Length: 387
Figure 1 (cartoon, one colour):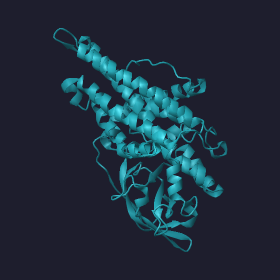
Figure 2 (tube, one colour):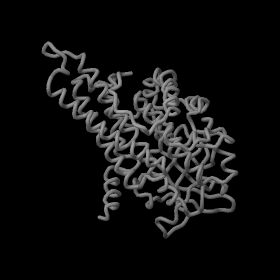
Figure 3 (spheres, helix red, strand yellow):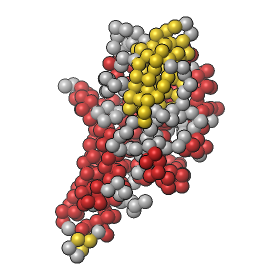
Figure 4 (tube, one colour):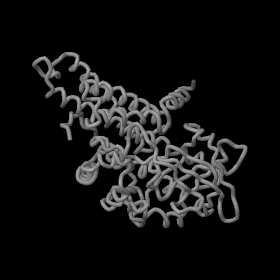
């Protein structure tokens, strides 16, 4: 790992979070980093990583102890995981999707029986979770979801297709947004938990992406899939409200990861330009190099301050939708810009995939797309301004 460029310590984290950070960093360095490039080439990380993470207490920190979780509702632990994954560059490890995006739906909307069925496996890593919102013809417009679920006795009959589903190959339980009522764009959506062996449920290919190659991203198909009515998550017709309720946390997770990834890009470049020689001296001694990296680090420091203020607000239950959109917009745009500037410092070597900066560059691109595109973030912010 590179030498950290230190930032002013923030009071958002306490000693227990830093102890957790050290433990998770050790796990990444011993169990993920050594084989990460091999898994990137294979296009998928092994399922066993989730079980190992669960055995160390890195899954379901907010799940109650009676279900095998940590019993602590403190999103700062989740933030530590996002930062450390970014710091190692192992961004294809879909643990934040499992923890930050999927588990909250089970926590908030599952019945007591559903919690007994699913939470222990989610906490242990025996069950890997995914969420399926995006469809081939529907991206950020959740109200445009066309997948249907029709009640049929004690089952729902599910028909439709989803795409770009992270953890899509490995997932054992998939939260599927489907239309259970016609004629209502927002009120007609419900959430169904589709289990691995559900009749009529199939997976398409593991999609070939430009970056995050180790993240299994799949197409999902539902052909008269029969889902037990007992797998309805939350209220019938309450899916849109449930989905929207977790978007601020999802976007904060992305912002945290982007901010940490941008810092890592600066660290990689700074280390390289100190050693790389051109015209008889280190290229870091050239004014253009110094000025570019000085500007990049300044952006990263400013971004860190803002993102951590959003984290502080979220822990206090005060993070608004438009503030979360600002964090995601700023963090992902700065990550893309800074990573591009840092790659330039490597010259031709920056174009070689064996160099971490090259992988960081392609991995960064999706941050401005998933979780709501930058354009959607600007829409949310603009509406928050009353425009």
